[in-house]
Image: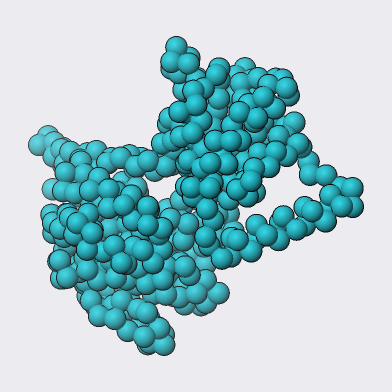
Length: 423
């Protein structure tokens, strides 16, 4: 399904629409302006409708029943007028000053046309990426992820009904990633390409991006937990619940649990204590995705066959009854876990924190810090110096708040440019 000029079209119309899209964009940009206030009003009203439950059936297509409630709460926090106005002020700052003694004045302007290539690991992300482009006055071309299930088109269509002017600044295509020719055409129309995804996706986008186009890359990042001292059962339960709830699919999810120790017996003692918490959390948040269930079953069968042949996984494995496991490793490398409630547990004394984490520079994002209160400030400082961008408590790794940065940067700022004008 394609959303173009506020109307829906069959995907078969893609080539015909792309053939005229450049001239349409030029006409819009030459004659129309999208004020931030118009976008704020529309997003605020739509957020109120989502929070009231009007879109629960739409959200339920991609979320579990308990997650529907979370999305309603998220709409209240991120789509309200106060949150959006705070973002504009925090990320773009006050209006640029016009020095009367200078022959030059400066203005902040939209980048122009943004081509969004969204990932499918977080529901609602494609629509929110477009909203960021709209808030900064850009025209927005969006290529949907394959698993979107029509949710983004419905959300953006509802936004356009709230403010029809937005429909002139949005074009959405369900183009498959294999259609590189269509994606190249979209990229040729863009002043900036906003790409969400892993190294493979970003490398592919770099290959098709024309010279001079700004790449706004939001690549996959790695999250982890760092445990120092003896955490409470409440903290361990919160960490386990986050792991089970996200299935470790988000950049902020904990892939590795590091312990502030050099002792393997300490590692085993922690695992013995943490596994029951993880087991209960996975039982409360079972894997329901058919593809994921098939992969888990295949992995389990391969493991059973390997064990029957006398082969063992690298590191000791403690398995729970709810298709989860803790994998105790002897190295300290930050790496992605087997996901779906299968967590790596490693040793990392605080003296080695910075040099070890620096080997993963460029991929660090979120750390859950479980430690005595008197150590929190010093350990936070080491984590930040190592390159971590978000330090959170045990169950809050993925929690959002108005005005937060993304991977250490303000997204709205990257969607704009500063122009110099001689008076």
